[in-house]
Image (tube, rainbow, N blue to C red; front, side):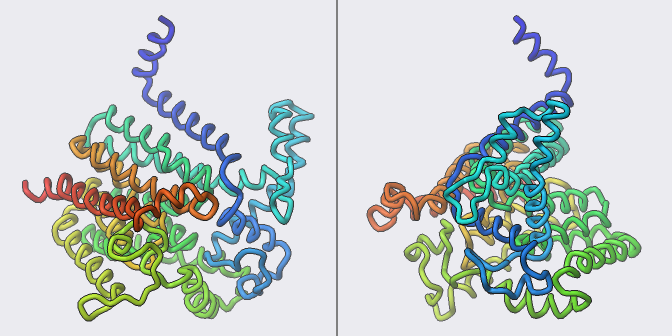
Length: 446
């Protein structure tokens, strides 16, 4: 009886329900940050934070004495990881707060400070938790944006709440941020929020948010043509464009100054464009563990030398990606930058980049993933295909994370000439076109 009354109470107090769900999602993710293998990028991020305080900042991006990898992300990321290391270095404050107020439980203080002996630098549990915290918080923010967009499109609070829950408690998003500790959701939060603000005609803050996304890691650069076209059809005031650009340039100077002094342009040219961007791509391959069209046509992680029909796969990929952009601008956005059209465009362009551009990493589908959830909950008819695509993309992450450490998982995926990888890659392609047909195609036929 009490449970029934609680359900009725929450149903009539939507704001409280949302707050409780967000809090529960945050606590669950924070708890799960203690799990997952301490390997790969999380150790790279940890070293960037530590070395931030050891190396002269004007040489930070040029030093090559690194245990794992020299910095391949823009300055905003390095400043963030440096700040995280500083917070962890002052973790004694947790014990002081506990002693003075008992607000922080003693078991958490002990857990936070416990050293993880398997890492070369003897980092503590709390450091890994803090390294994952920005992505955990970003997941909470993205789920709230999804709620607002689905509510606006569908006019249904049930669908909006379902979308929030689907994202917040999705094994895929939990695995990527809490287990793996990747930055995809952090990058996506600023990118999605930028497009949401663009829809709301808050142009100054939208431009600043897009800049922040790109200056953490430029994953969202593939959306710039669509973003600029929406700006064009919305016809913002010149004043708003000027202030948005001015604030972004000011932040660029502030974030870059510690690493470059006053030579910001030289830093952008010599460090970011010439060194950082090529290094961040890694080996030039058809696909870097991404289950896309190239893992169907060739063995996974094949070197980028293949030519089909006289031109390279890279050129074919960019050609198809360009055609998708043209299709989206002409048929989806047109003269109506509604929330549904904008998120349809994000899904179409983001997944096209993942499926057809060469050199894609396994997690580079993520810019399109929140938009996928918006679409399938706004039109519930495509939910089954959305869940199938969700499962296939999650299987891609499992492969990428465990393939080096688990012989059993590698064997399953590589069995019979990579049959499972090819099947999941085909599933990604079919799921993409089905979602396009059921959502974007439905609007075009009206």
